[in-house]
Length: 619
Ligand code: GTP
Ligand code: SPV
Ligand code: MN
Image (cartoon, rainbow, N blue to C red; front, side, top):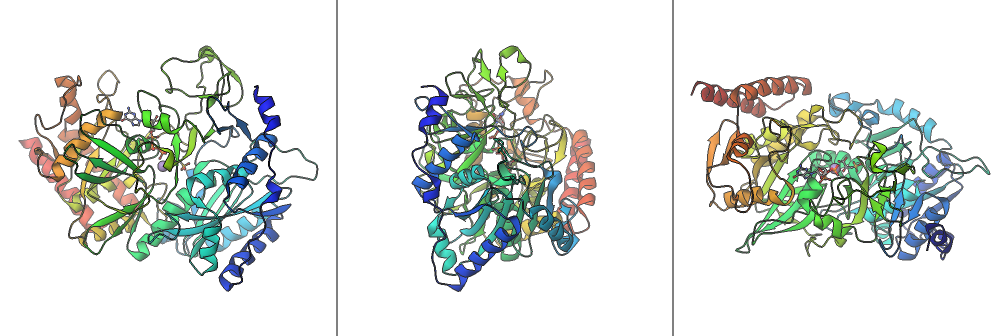
């Protein structure tokens, strides 16, 4: 069956059967309903649809998008119940330059965020959103971050005129009437409003991916609101994700004593059956999804997935930290995901997936760079153009992604929706030089120092020059909803209250040799580093001190069964005092740029590092 024929048969249900406003007689529900009416009065949509999260509604929505050309239904035999979306070429990633924190006081946004004066920003947004949904359906999407009704969960509602965003939110969060019921019962919720900014004149034909050249992603942390205009892509449009679960939630965490972090979450199980819970913060497109789905190459070890992008962390009454993944799906980078790098992801993607900006094969399946070793001879690229290996451009966009339910991963932990006690926290980034494969922090304060000094080479996940080195403390530079220096202080204080804090490590899978190639094989082989970390936790692996932290002593890193030359191993762990002293100077500059609220404890850590480096240099 050709794609065109499939499309013609897809129309079996109708979205119009769904979408009625639910009926609850409570003041709390009336507050929600009146907010919806207010947004509708401003944005002037053709109709309002309350999303109930049912299977029938979801299928009708998808069928509707196939009919309108927003989605291509993939070949059902090869990729059941899966779809491809092609975005506008100008709407392919998060836009940090268009992301704003509109806090009452500028100092609360801090120098690392774009601050916007809230009253002026509201006026700007009112003008932009005025009539912005004309001719479109305005969807009301109630969602829960964390399992519905869970003790650490938080609720929200997204209003959006993008059916693609609705379908994505339904995968990435828990959506539906159970959430509306909790809101009607008086639970707190966050207001998020999204418009692609492409009103339709009567009779005007729509495009496959409506968007607007003018883009705004605006957070009001004081009133817990998000407004996003002009983009339909990823974190710009799935507002529960970066906007709420990180930027707004980090502010809630500051005020309420918890942490909202850009971290994956896994359970590592040793051959003896001991479980370790590990969270890891790596910047965008630096390996979180891959580590979350790690398939260890070393015998006896296994890893269960709990989360791949965001972790909420709270202190428990026993002096430990407890963590949940607030999301329900993965919005993962496609390129580089293949049988040889991440089998688990490939298996997860067998069915029920929305792909965005990947290439289409002639038989109606998807492809991207790195999926298979063999490159197909003929493809349709992410922009819908014919493509061959000689085309001289990637077939899939470097930030092309898959959206898939977490529960579908073969590696998902059975109890993945429950909170787990944290044993270790990892900080990492893409560093071609200087940063060793793994180093253990001396204590909590040193670990927080490590997190605060993370820098990484830019990736395609946001605008900017790919490869350029930039600071990305805690991998939160684009996602911290308040003053970065205050955030550092919050981390320092959180540890002080713990009697049994997780141990902190820095990792770097991306160090390169003189030939420009990666020194470390990465992916499944990262289990060797995880093994050393777990063995450190139970006190059975040896380490040697370097000025920047503890690294595996000779023979402590399990290298059975892989070929890493002695030279490469040395290069992977080399700590050059001069380059680190230069790095320390840059850290001082960075701290100065973050402002005079950087905690004294971190300034002291910097001084102590310099002292250790000077000693090493003399020695
Ligand atoms: P976001 O979803 O943007 O937050 O990204 P992420 O941190 O989840 O990154 P992801 O796991 O999707 O990896 C991004 C890219 O890094 C992919 O192209 C991977 O193939 C590549 N990558 C991941 N792990 C490794 C590794 O251990 N070694 C090397 N060389 N590349 C890796
Ligand atoms: C990231 O950029 O860190 C992502 C993708 O996880 S997005 O949801 O677009 O922010
Ligand atoms: Mn991310």
